[in-house]
Amino acid sequence: MKTPRLLALFFIVSCFNVSAVNAAEHHSGHGASSGGGGGESGCLKPQLTKFLPANLATVVPGSTFSFLAFNVSKPEQIEVTVKAIPVEVTTEDKESFYLVKGNLPANLVNTTARINIKVNAKNPRCNGENGWLVKISE
Image 1 (cartoon, rainbow, N blue to C red):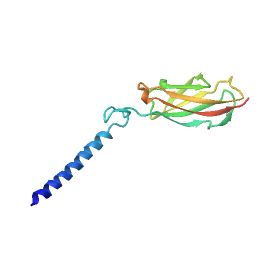
Image 2: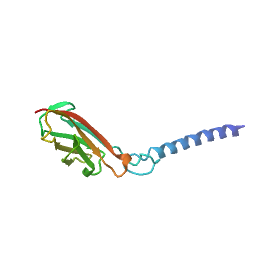
Image 3: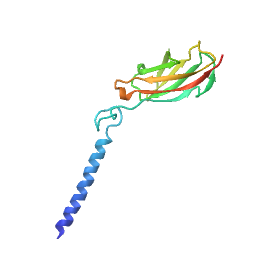
Image 4: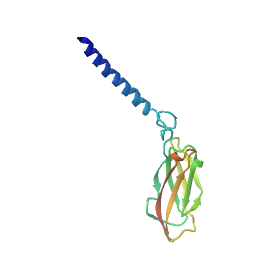
């Protein structure tokens, strides 16, 4: 008589065990390590934040801009353009992110321009892109 209850209890416990193993397998691959289910779990998308000057701010030609880049392996992966003009940037390694600085092209006047950032990773699915607009005065 106790056998059906024991079998039911054994079945329930084994189901919980399988669920725990399955959850651990699918959640173990965060970060840059491989394994844990494939797909995009082998990389973290770059995060580009803290844009200065602020979006739609009015600035003078040649003004300095900056932003923070998280989840970037090497600073060489960061490309910045303003109105399709490549902009040279400097990077400071801050341990867990890069502080990126550059100057707007001095020949851009009386216009609105997008500071466009692209991060090119080895795996194209791990690339990132972001940016913001500034109004450039005379």
